[in-house]
Length: 116
Image (cartoon, rainbow, N blue to C red; front, top):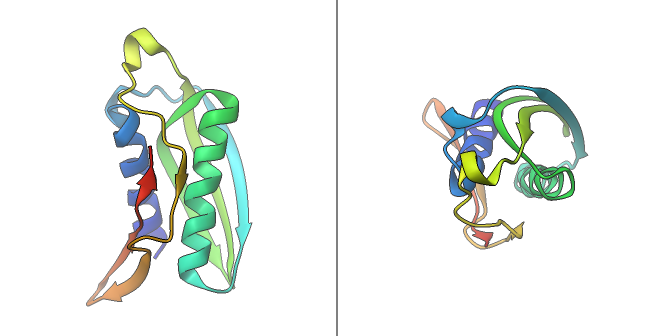
């Protein structure tokens, strides 16, 4: 499940800019607590969006740990540089639409629709 959350974080960054163009200059830590994995995912995505917005940053690397409904994450990135990152959109928030966190075979799926 942690790997699915990491991939979703990178996908969130990819909505704004190419994650490969994000330099790792600083780290931000977030913590979410929720017993329901889907609501935990929603909190995580909204937490990343909040940090992107309030710090005017983009993140190119995510580390996620989940234990007993508590998620801790380290988001690594840099301040948004409009001329270099060429942001496509501004993500406003995660929604309950298509919200899903489930194990599919040996892999996990974590998804939701975000408002832009």
